[in-house]
Image (tube, rainbow over all chains, first blue to last red; front, top):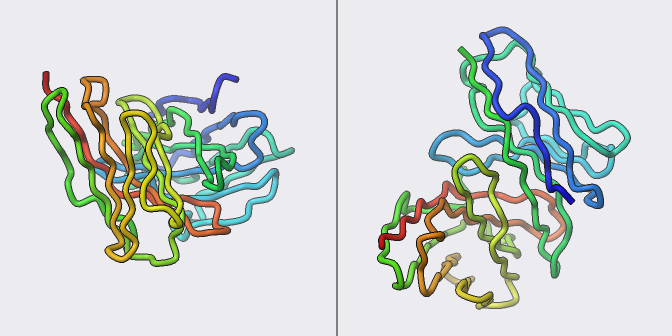
Length: 115
Length: 112
């Protein structure tokens, strides 16, 4: 078990370009999450999948953002027409229940810098 | 709408002493609370959790206390060690909800 893997770790792009991040969760976890973290803030929820179904999306997830989880395995998060305000760390997590608590295991994150 | 708040951005503690990190919440429907630790260039890692039916949970050097009437929880680390230097996040969830709501984090520095 190698944990949650995210790629790329760092992406620098120009405003207006599209970017895509990939997340490979822990294989036995059926829930997958995307969070965004900006400097000095805690992770903010973006969206959640159970298997291949996207069950919840935050209002933070504008129309320029789209997430998929084909076949219930890896997931991708695409940001179209990036803006400078999109610069953040994008965290992926997968989860399993531990004694009733939904414990998320996070990847190391993909840092996006929009110039 | 910040439902989970950590009002201390930073905390400095001497090695061997007790570290106390605090967290307040506003949503009375929250029934699970978790603490995560984050080192630079890594994702947050789970530390300890507590259910709303308990007021204390202990795991080695780490103890979490929950005061439901005050909507307040705290994480005690004793004794504090240099490796405990990290950013600590408090998180909460409601029964049946899958997402966690995080606080802003507190940067803990343990001084030798």
